[in-house]
Length: 285
Image (cartoon, rainbow, N blue to C red; front, top):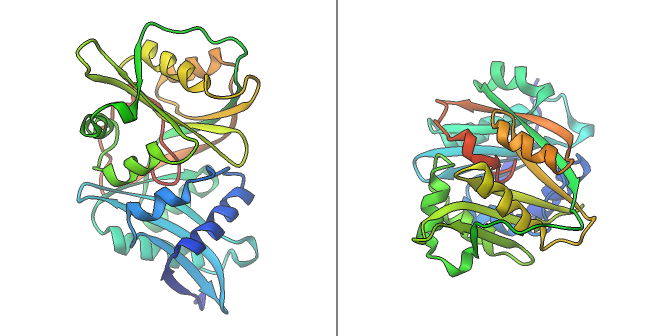
């Protein structure tokens, strides 16, 4: 049965609608996320319209010719079960073509993503939440604001942990209002870790959190938390295969809010999961 909907490219105003929907789903978007999303791929955000009103959305961002990522995939509750999601997914897949493409899917939809869209499960991510400790000891890692470093070095470090070139997105993500972005460096100035924290509808989210080893990851986490009020809520999206990341979350008494399944179609990239302590965001990878 046809859905009788039209799929159109999303505008900046419609992005605000989509993020409000995401907030109602409990995804807790960042306060300034939308300003980073559209510039990443202006042709990769789609809105479904039915009878003159928006009823669903999806993002399908190309990162150069290396990779794609699908997110923000939802249909408003009143319109579910009428193939709108299938038409949105078709638009996303046409845009991304044969690129290796990831998605962080809700667990209830995994079988649908496999049978209808050709995605295969890779690992589970946990959204964890905790409270900022009153006392935060300083580590011995050298940590600097990313703005003080050569941006090319930041991009190169990011590309070790993500399968595509996302310099446009990253530049906005790390420098938007009320965001703190830090890099760990060695004595020669070589980047050894990257982290960012941003305000959200509820609390603050840390992401990405990449590090060459668990000690650097924890030192970065402490410095990011230092910018937040003691006792306030923070979130971290942890890949389950990284046992050191799971242990780090446990040391800070973080609890699971929900989980997703990272899935890929057209090939799964090789990523250093032991160095990914927190993914950047569920929407864009």
